[in-house]
Length: 111
Length: 111
Image (cartoon, each protein chain N blue to C red):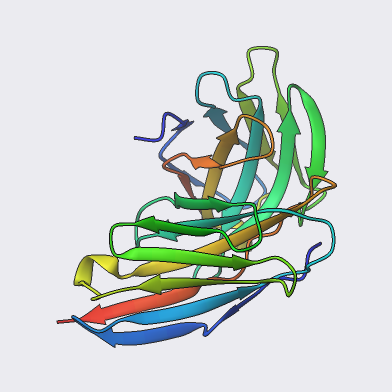
């Protein structure tokens, strides 16, 4: 158990819908990262927040957005969902620049 | 985005054999290199953090070396066991706070 929690574990929705994925970092970690793993693909970095501020952006679509709240939990919002958005979404946290601890992931299925 | 290459993309190893694979990264502005192990249906887990040229780290039968001047790291598995089957990811960080996960080396250990 890494100490990073993600909810929900599974999510099934329809095309065009909007969903929110939630992540709670390890106690004391200020950085939160979001990743997408599509079928047979590697780990694609989406976005990083540090203490509430966006720090780095990866290959995140404009339909996706994220934020980190004062209590340091983070949410990833995915809108206008397409079939291709079906993937495993990981959240990770770290103290700052350092080892990332990954949550169990949220599996999103778009039908 | 940092240019990170891991080779080979995959390899098959007989149980009991030793193996090694490479992570190449930009040598300029190097800050740290992280290795992760990612087992199927699980989340990536941290293996090593390496920062100094010539660093060697060891965890059980797995060890890693670092050459920051030429920009590469080797990961070695001695006497491979089926439980070593996983994708091994490297993630270098530069001094500007940028990082990049490699695509990984998938290791399959057959009994």
